[in-house]
Image 1 (cartoon, one colour):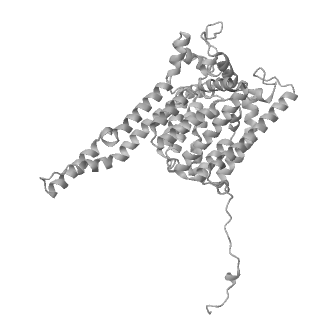
Image 2 (cartoon, rainbow, N blue to C red):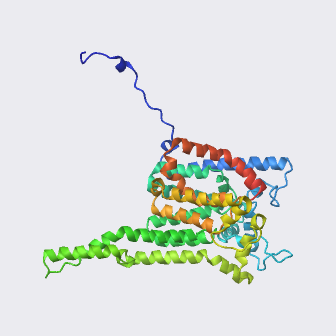
Image 3 (cartoon, rainbow, N blue to C red):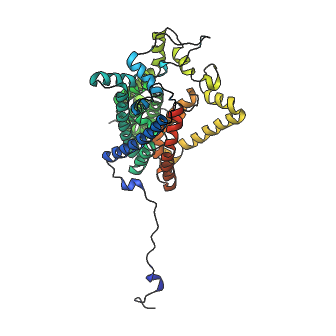
Length: 447
């Protein structure tokens, strides 16, 4: 057959493989894009809140928070936001409320002061109501949080992973929390900002973010632990360079080339066994890391001390937090690393304990996957530390879903963002579950 002959196969049209549409390809890598996604999600959440409030109002539903039936704005400052209102207007109680048996009842000491203090300052400066101040602060802080989240993930895995992390957070089941008077937006802004500053080696900013987080919501200790991991990683990765520099300084004018080579090899061998961090890292940066870590840890442990000094009870904060445990496990003594097993064993027996162990194994596998590690050691160290914090001190309740929000950077891992079916399922599923969450976790019980 000649070169110019036409074959049947050459007449067939080229078959192009169909590719699933990717929102990341349609959304430009700009900060304005991230804000547009966030504003679209706020409109989505506010519509859901308005519909639920209107239906509840028309059907005569008895709202759990007094005054929530008055207006949509009042509805958005229900539950914990009502506690923040009390703090913003009246401060903290100096005498803990107790029942007839002397047990501490739930009270405002369980809520940290940064968010209500900022609301109070905004109210004084503008004359607006608490509801307006809380909603404005929550929404603005949420916008900052998603911008920092985008930059944090983008710097590690690129635009696709970053924009999908933002989409899945904003349109997820708990996305409505950025449109109510909760401190989640401020907490995420501080935590994500701290992790990003750690990656950029701006340790003064890490310290500032950590202190703000420590007085916004519990969990800032995870940032201090992540700093410790960051220090170890920097020491291990930069140690070979320091050994080479050390070896280079061992040449002397009186020694020949053979002696220099022999001395360099000896230095490398000895350095591989142990090289102190202050011989590896710049001393100024080492000092900043240590000071920031210790200061954040101190800030994270400070609130129980403040509660003690204000109320005269050394266990004021601990007993206040455990007052929310009564309906689930009674009044046990607090032992770190046991709450999850305590709850699971109480309700499911040995099967529950086995379930918790299985979850811990799955979490360890996820945090050590190559896809997760691509997010960078700072992000992995922080999210793993925060997960460890939850297991160590938190009793799983309906608010567990809200407390998992600091793990959102994991949504940008390639194992999620590069799988079209998975990311599409998570996005659609999150949007479908958000109205369910608004009804169950805002209308009936606190999220």
